[in-house]
Image (cartoon, rainbow over all chains, first blue to last red; front, top):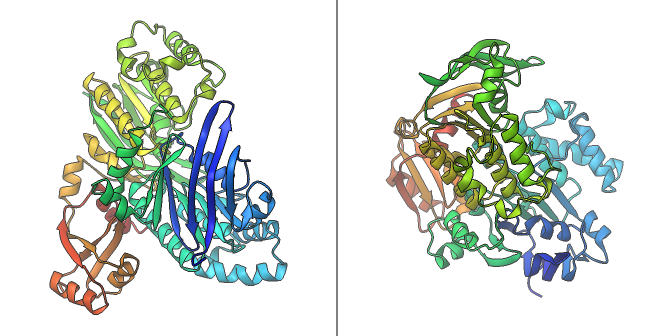
Amino acid sequence: MTEEYVIIAENLTKKFGNFTAVDHITFSVRKGEIFGFLGANGAGKTTAMRMLCGLSHPSDGKGIVAGYDILHESEKVKQNIGYMSQKFSLYEDLKVWENLRLYGGIYGMKDKEISIKMDAVLRSIDMQSEKNTMVRDLPLGWKQKLAFTVSIFHNPKIVFLDEPTGGVDPITRRRFWEQIYSAAASGITVFVTTHYMDEAEYCDRVSIMVDGKIKALDSPQELRKKYSASGMDEVFQKLAREATRKGD
Amino acid sequence: MNAVSVNRLCKSYNGVKALDDVSFDVAKGELYGIIGPDGAGKTTLFRILTTLILPDKGTALVQSTDVVKDYSTIRSIIGYMPGKFSLYQDLTVEENLNFFATVFNTTVKENYHLIEDIYKHIEPFRTRRAGKLSGGMKQKLALSCALIHKPDVLFLDEPTTGVDPVSRKEFWEMLMKLKKQGITIIVSTPYMDEAKLCDRIALMQNGKFLRIDTPDNIVASYPYRLWAVRSSSMHILLDDLRSCQGITSSFSFGTCYHATMDETLTVEKLKRYLLDKGHHNIEINEISPTVEDCFMLLLKEDGV
């Protein structure tokens, strides 16, 4: 094996009754890669992501995340990944440092390790002076910055970002992507969903899900070439228009 | 006569100014966009205009009717689609629609022509409970319910947030059709690309309107020449642009960076600088700014 894969999905499938939400998807993600996971609402992204995070059992197929089987070793999977959603999942009535302390503790970090790392990460995001600030008093952009920092505080092999930039202003959105780049540069694999198609261009590779299946997977450059499109928005429109699952 | 007329509106929550001296008018039949990130004050403004909360200061008229004194009149002539799905989850699609028609003393039949285009997408699911609908279908049902009493003014608070690009496009096509029926529409969105579809837009941040104008005028008033820059190593290019003397701003925009420069720098000089830094396939093209470029410039001037 010349390349190290941190996500391997083989025919991963999830059925709810006779509805197949995720339909035999096969793909893999390399270490340190920024992987964009795109699709229309209802295409099956969230269901697929929940399986990869060990939160939902596949009906069929296989998945290995961070070296662990998502069906039989789901607890191990959870310990080795980070997760951040649009809702940020920070505790508003805890201080900045208390949030880091809490999540560090949950992921089994030692007190000493937590306190050493705390100062380093707060410095890196320029929030040392906010250490004792209640999270609810932070501006939205800072909360986002902190939420991402919390999600990779335990140094996971991979971080799942579910629409992390929804609703933030255009400058903050771009700063957030710089944070993503530096995490990827430090070896953390980034698995991200977004509805902003300019952000799809920032990914190393993207997949586009339509009706539970992966319809396209490649680098943004190759996808643009293949679909003779000027941008990922056009690629997405071309593929997702074919969807038969309506309305979602 | 204006459909909406707002004069020096203020609203604070625990000392935080959600709305800070906002004034604007919306003409009858206009499609008016309020563009801004979360926390800009969009929802507070909508809730005052729909008579759900009271302003601290200032006045607002909807169809020449005061939102404080004559709130009950206003409620019968406006449609409101809040950002959060607010229909009855345990009523069916059909029951929700009938309920809203009845509350406004009308019938689904009477105004069916207004919602037909939208409702026909969800009609096959009319016996399904609203809570069991997918996101896109909920959005269509909410819009149908907000329209069923034929409102004069329609308020849509972030109807496309979290919605995929294809459904967003469909939703805006529906709004264009409603506009043709003469309904005044005020819509908020965090997506800058939707701004160009509005007649006029207000760019909002920190409780203030930074600019109000047509999308064309806003773009035309961008004061600098703007350049799209590309090279074979995009990741490093951003840092190199930032460290280049004379570059005054640089932001990522999909497949390229948008940059502005001062008079000390020329395209030739920049190209040479980037070549020296080891870049290949350098492309520097002058482009017209987008609304997003303009908004970022305003945010920078505002100190974000």
